[in-house]
Length: 263
Length: 278
Image 1 (cartoon, helix red, strand yellow):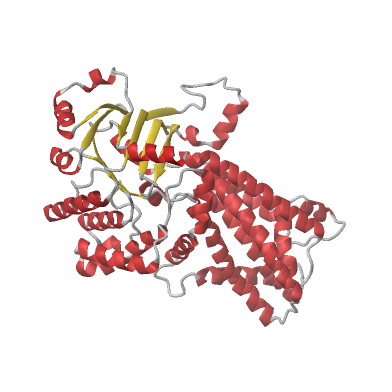
Image 2 (spheres, rainbow over the protein chains, first blue to last red):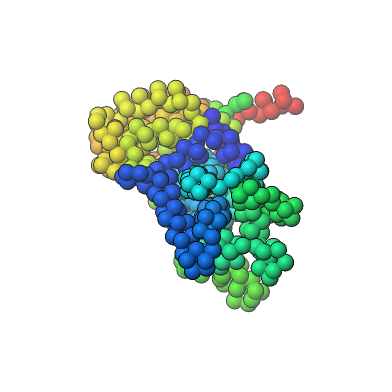
């Protein structure tokens, strides 16, 4: 049973331990978005599949890249990128849906942060079906390295939790944070090697290395494709996760109490 | 541990957003870059409403408190602050015990889900185990008398039906502390009588009960002590009949000039408990 929440630490902890609640809410969110459609949340999968197919086909025609190579690279990278990008752009209106509950019950606020992050993870899991299908159809050789995608995903998940904690409360306070982030995410997409590849020693490599999102993508993508992330990848991804979590916790503890005032 | 609910010189000043500049991050950056050269009413250019203006109340077991006051006097803000929905901008809130509140009707209901699913979802939010939640749900179903509507989406409900459902859900949540805002005026006659009866039952079991009301009958029926709120402050407290009498006849602005005294009710058990703990 939940006790009344009086400190940030209690809020974070009680929100976390009541996992049935936030997982349930996240499932409701996902089902609700596709209510009254026949295939439900698999629309996520379908639109992702269409995009991956379309781009791989285009790049093999226009850039004369190897279709099979391109589709596997994209199915892995884009899936991870989408989870990060969606979290970046959705977190600022995280509390919009939660407001009726926030204004009616004395519940931990962080419930809604976990609800949003695990929701992004569920969407990611639906998109992973595209990667699995591609692997099977094109008989791409995966190997034991794929196990390392799990700690990689863990780092990404921590980063997303920090983002949602911080951007959620800031987005409630500053209403133009959402559009501001949306405009940055587009640029970030082009600057992150999702469509293009980081070639050692090139100018592109410098561009990629300076971008923390690249390292977060790479610690998941490389194992999925059977290679190993570099130690730089691990270190930068780990440091990013820690710093973002720190930012999120500080912003959350500062703005948490004001949340019900910024209607 | 004795059930206890307190506010210590609590102030709630909430911002009023009147232009998009107030809630703009670009605006905030520009303001801080200008070193306050364009400072307005306050440091960030926002206007604030004083919802609570220094309220101290310590409530112990056995408290049945009624709150009266005009519209906009701070009754709902006080209840929301006690409930932990608003946080004091200055001062603090102390709570020992589980708290349930009926503050806004229709809140937290998902229109796409049936009454039953909504009831179960809200129980899940509070971490109530599945078996117990099913029992409570059955009890809610009996109370709301919605028949087959209980399994239809809430968007098909009339407003009166929605009131019944959200009232039943809120009052079914476990708690030693029960907070109720003026809600009995919604719903039909039959429901009002049932709701009053349910509140009475709950209030009997609750160790601390606080209710805002505009009705003398409700005050007499449910409360053993009353406060009169005005301008976000407690301007009078005492037996319900006396407070109601004053509320109906005196000028609140005159009472507002008196220095406020903290409201302390039934806290003996907690104080002796604390001494025993050392």
